[in-house]
Structures are given as C-alpha cells and as structure tokens.
Length: 158
Image (cartoon, rainbow, N blue to C red; front, side):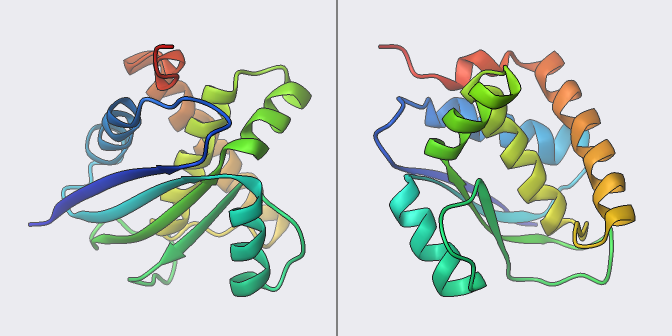
C-alpha cells in the first residue's frame, strides 16, 4: 500500500506552511475521500513557472490556477484505484483569485488542492454538466476540509 505525499514550495509570494498543507492533503485523501493508496506530489509555484507549464504541456497561453498531471489514468470517478500524479498550484493566481472572490489566498490554495485531487480521482470539467458536478463536489469537500482544520493555518508564521 502506497501513501507517498510530498509538498515542494518553489515560490516566494507567500510563506506557506508545507507540513500543514501536507496534513490537509492527507485529510482530504484519507478521511474525506477514503483513499488508502496514493502517490502525490504537490508543487507551489509562481506565475512564471505556471505559465511555462501551461504553455508547454497544455498549449494554453499565460498562467492558470492549478494544473494536474495524472500518471495513472481513469475512465471517470473511481474509488478503487491508486491516485498517482502531481498537482501544481500557482500562489500568484491564488492571491489574485482570492481578491476577486473575497476569500483568503489560503482558501484558494485549498480549493486548488481539492480540484486537482478530484481530477486525479477521475472527475472532468470540460463539459458544462461535468463541470457543475465537479464544482458541487469541490465545494462540499472544501467545506468539510475547512471544518476539520482551519485553512488559515496554511500560512506559515512570520
């Protein structure tokens, strides 16, 4: 049984408590989604790195909030397979989106984590109906995660 989970902070816009983010990811995976097998890397990056990833791998210009690389593959939501992949979270986008949606950047980071994990679990957001279903699940999981551990703790002490 694999439970590999690591967080790498490669940005400097905000101080992030990497162990707290790892704990949130573990809570999401094990407690909220009931997953006992995962191999997941989480990278916190700045906009220039996210732009390079977005352009190189997805053919989209500019930065984005989250990119997920699924190394296992799925045919739809599944609960029986290992989650294996990498999630790249752009802190600059989290800060920007937080201002737009009157949220904290920490909540946005947690939302991107949930979104990325849902992609690894087989959720897709390309079609409107699938996007709506994924968004409902994302909102529910984000709420449950916030109830279990305050998302404000994702900010590292100064």
